[in-house]
Length: 370
Image (cartoon, helix red, strand yellow):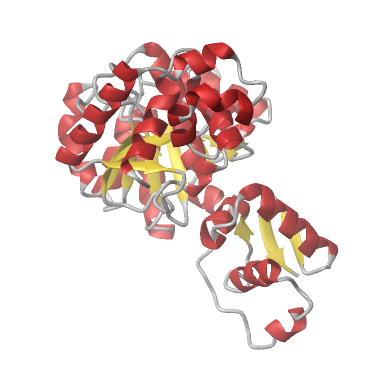
């Protein structure tokens, strides 16, 4: 992506009254941010129903100057600026209606790993929560060591998830509620630095943004959107982890929760999720692996021949080819990653394959060849 388009995309959601969803709608209508900014006076011809306040908001030299400074800061500090056109941009997140226009990323891991889970929970983790978190990640390492662990670098369950992943030599991503010019809380700085070479730090906020309350709620959608599944370990009756679980459900992602004693303050949230059928009760990592059908890759026996599918379209053949490598089936978000086909188009292809009697869907959005 050229420099000007990147500057304009970074600026677009920062304009007053626009926001992320408004910015995405404008990009969809115009085709590029460059057209919006450099042809501001002719936008009525391109987008007849565009409000005058938006046209006026696009005249923002101060914001553009700030964005230029942000790009310079990113280059100086080895920070990647990812847009949806970049292959490194998270495929799972790309399919969310409120996905960030630009992501700032400093790290080494693949944001499109085959298996990604987020682990969230209370900031007031008890010994039960800490031990559960550590045990779960140790078990997951034994089953699927390449799984990417996502959390928010906050106090409590978040930081214990990151540290447990690092101890197991697993990659882990911290999604921040502020710019990459700081680490909050500062006591987690050493862990954050270690994560850069064993995962990474990710945010939608430019430098200078402080960890304000509303930013934490915004970043929760990134945590959920990055991941195939959300794991909740300890939560009070209300809290950020429950918001993340709700967002995951709105994205049609799986959610799991560890139960706790009914009288424990920081088990109420998890127990309520399970009781309301918003999360599946789990006790071990194996429960998640089985529910997501994340068994190790196996080769199909020679009896299954691709010639059987000669009447398929090329995209259908591509999906069949992918599913042939996974006899136990593959979760739809993983198919998105492997095929690089947008989720709305992919679901249509999978439906056609179902109608042709070639695939069928299992629990958890897992597709399997018949």
